[in-house]
Image 1 (cartoon, chains in turn green, red):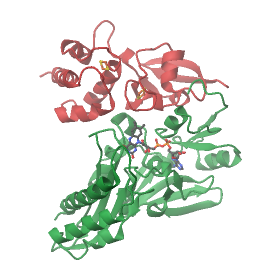
Image 2 (cartoon, protein in one colour):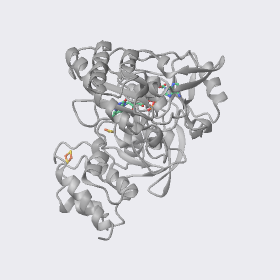
Image 3 (cartoon, helix red, strand yellow):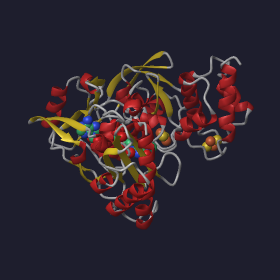
Image 4 (tube, rainbow over the protein chains, first blue to last red):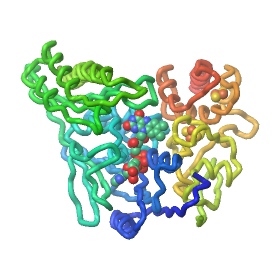
Length: 292
Length: 158
Ligand SMILES: Cc1cc2nc3c(=O)[nH]c(=O)nc-3n(C[C@@H](O)[C@@H](O)[C@H](O)COP(=O)(O)OP(=O)(O)OC[C@H]3O[C@@H](n4cnc5c(N)ncnc54)[C@H](O)[C@@H]3O)c2cc1C
Ligand code: FES
Ligand code: FES
């Protein structure tokens, strides 16, 4: 990057208003610099040549993790390691933490943020499926004010999001956990560490006192142009005690929803098959965490 | 391109440098501060050869801008030995022959030190997981893991 031939401006505003002002005033390509684990790699590989980088890590409200009436409000600049090291977060949302733990190495997680993982909009982003099944909401601010975007509607395609020009994700919030509920995220990769998901499956489910599933949400990553919510897969579990038939129906619904690509990491058929297998395993883990 | 003046702390010393917005902390350490102990393997976060700590957090210095170092505390491999006295991890790497070409070694040592700070008594699996972001083309990792486990044992005073 040292030998770049174009002019790059770098700013580190202390307030959100100042950040929006800088972004709005710049005519060229603007990139928000959060952990930089996508932005700096993309600059190094000459995939992007921004005119302005706006570092958001000095904006106080974007750095905190708050427990908010039983749920959470997590600042957009909170790093993966800050979530891993949080005393309660992993107990409340173990499936989201499963996804966060898979984002690169310890070094990468020391910088990478979940908001950046979402905004980069890779179909294989590991924190996105569990955020979707958790019902996470992104709080966004831009030149035209503030709005909320459910994570399920955030990614619109590879590298594409629902953000309008100049909009920043300030934080995202997670609802209060229902009693006897649990979530899990599993991915399959050719290598055990430091690899990109071939398939990722997130499940968040709730059981009643008798062990019957009353609610289940299922999301798949890396098997389409963006992470998918699969309503039929969740419906296969609701009303059951997660018996063999229910698990088979879950796997079939998960596989049926895949529309993957063939690449060096896995063929279409393989991804479709693995999605079903992982869905069953993730459901079993989520059920154990829910206290089944 | 416009250079900005940056003041920071490296291994406990106050340091000033001039930096362009495109330079990474790795570029600054090696090219502006002549601290070449920190290595570049990939410049894309994959290999861990450039590992340093930034305000105590283990990071890849190739994924941090030099300008982001302002006012921070940076620890590099150069700060690991105490004068002529090697850090226990450095001694154990030599004892266990945990290096061959050595290009990955500074990054592995910095990463291992950071692990032992948060977890003085790691299991072998925990060592392997923590060091998964440090690639080594020579050793096959076995001796590296042994050296880290042995250094941890010594540092616990066992
Ligand atoms: C070696 C390596 C391995 C990796 N492995 C994995 C993996 O296994 N799984 C995985 O999912 N990811 C992986 N990643 C990618 C992962 O680190 C990133 O997706 C990360 O989560 C992005 O967060 P960041 O804070 O670094 O974002 P940045 O790089 O700072 O930003 C990413 C994008 O989002 C935009 N952006 C960031 N924050 C905001 C905001 N608040 N509002 C609006 N836009 C914003 C930026 O402008 C940019 O376009 C890996 C990366 C590396 C370098
Ligand atoms: S040079 Fe930074 S990770 Fe390879
Ligand atoms: S000793 Fe050569 S790469 Fe590790």
